[in-house]
View 1 (cartoon, rainbow, N blue to C red):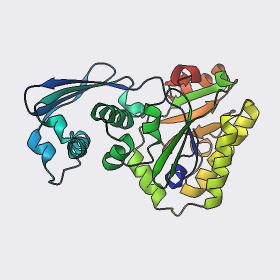
View 2 (cartoon, rainbow, N blue to C red):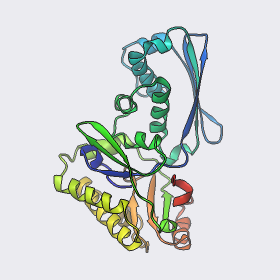
View 3 (cartoon, helix red, strand yellow):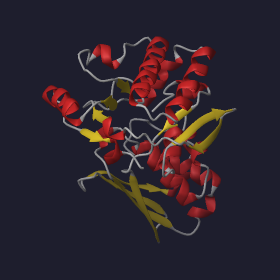
Length: 292
């Protein structure tokens, strides 16, 4: 909700876990392999492969274009920490997404969280090795409500946040029909560093104010201030300028700018009448998407 990009440099972020995620089952098998299968929300298989123990033990460079790249990389790090997990048997691991892949709601972070829980390893360390990023989404994958997230000295700090807006019926999440590449967004931000310490302090103030906000007008002012700060830092126009200049409510990009979701304020009629004719059909109410 707040702190995108700047959370990488220690800003305080407000993050909201979603009701949908990713489930995983693990069954020991007699063969010394990892049989992996990932299915979509529609029960279609999108990953199906087998890793042998030699691949998992190996330190040979990996081709990051392989379909199994991230799973194999994760398994290598898990093996390095917990070799006894693989001593006498292998595993059949089945992972199931609860949302369409292109929604960008955390297929990577929920995967890391599930693997870390199974192997009993640090999910943030595992995420740093496999995907990178701030780790806020990994924290969300293991949270039941809004959280503050901050990285200090490369260590995550996660605390419950009191975000329970009385005006939640005026908050809407619209999918932009485009999945943003988080690593590309991070790389672009990294090219703009170092971050302005005053901007971090201002975002921290906005985060705390937003978490306690119970007034829609103030909420709109806060997210518009936040948009202006991030726009200035990354050198990209606000979503309200680039795509939706005539929308009557307030808008905020979420996550990597240019894809995934945008937050819009207004009545259901106003939001649907504006976005649906433009081809944006995935419009979800706050209480429909967010754990509350």
